[in-house]
Length: 628
Image (cartoon, rainbow, N blue to C red):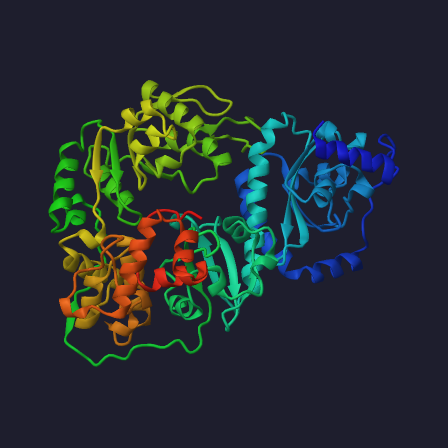
């Protein structure tokens, strides 16, 4: 028996004095009290209903009822197949019923209230014998201050299966509970600046990111549980009430400027550990200064809603991209595995799809899977699928995995470096035997062309034992390296085409000063950042003319950019200044101390907070995690 279940049984016996075989009638609150409870949790119920609808679609036909209970274990609302309502009614799983441990003994809802972490109570785990046919997977929901506010539960009656078969269900329920928490946090702080943060840029726009609310004075108002986890903080009080400058190497003014550019990511460093994070800042920004530039020459852009899907479109006028397109076309109809490398946002999936459309598989499916965006607990079923009845929570008709969906076409595995080692072994078997085995099912023959992409160095990962050597050599047929946007020689044509595509059916124009800034920007987010910047500028510009003031703050107010750690961009000999001397001194001492920031701060007799602010002000790129 699991420790949590064992502890619950002891409470039922010693504290609640329950009899496991006695047929207690379920306690159900009266209608008036239920209305009062729902009114008290109005926002919670509204948000949870929407998430429960989404979760129900994922598990429909599997015999589950979805239940939302308050922190006392009283069921507030439910989502259940009408054909199964009577079954759940007889089990006592009805709106208004009290499913606390004190009332019903060990069960998903009540035990989760006590344990405060996701839990599955499967059949004989239940204290009361009348509940032995139930299997319940429950996860806690916390309010923006971290207090337990509700329990989200998926319960089945006579569902069978083993405890291990419930892992998929508990993963789905927990993910939905976290989504409810995120919505509650954002709703409560809708009038504040919100910093959406993660240590990986591709996760900032997903549910994986942390959220931090900041008031108009630059003080942190609140932080959700994910942000605490990412920042390595044990308690909200380590963040709440502190200035943003104390936590990150950024100022409130810099965040204010970033707020007006919700599609752009900014980089920040944690002043305590020196770890780099990526953030998107949203919220109201009263009084944000804007630049009013005089009207200069304006370049017309003809409307062109056509999306560049061919290799030629993507190649443009850049010699390296033209060579990539030429090589891709030569192997388009050959069953050669393709690895596409390039920095985040450089268009790896777009290139893969263009290669697919140039091949003799163009009329067949192109199935893209982002291995970094799917929780590890779900990626196996997503890729390989499962048969009907493979586990409790599975769809009645089963599910075709992404590999089977790509039959006769192309399977594109983005961020393949994030695939767990165990699944790498299964993928290798699929590629070698050309058949996929769904969970609980029989082998299915497949005909697929595999392309994969990563911004990480797979060869280095292989050397460290983080990526299977045999899979690496099986996938590494031809390697295509996409250049960063800042390195492309056709930036002008690329920018103008991007403006035309984002403009849609209407003509628009771009001011010469704005175009010049777009041409000279460093573009750390590459083509994705360019599209977001242009899309935002078109949305806020006047008279369909993009002016300098319409561009994101980090583009119209560029900092001194560095081509390497040690040297800034070349400048005139007479441009040496006190600031330049300070920067050179910082770089020299940082390198001498092998990035040990504690030693660097001690050398200059300043705090680490001050050191990080100087590093950011001088545009020194942090190319590895600092040591302390």
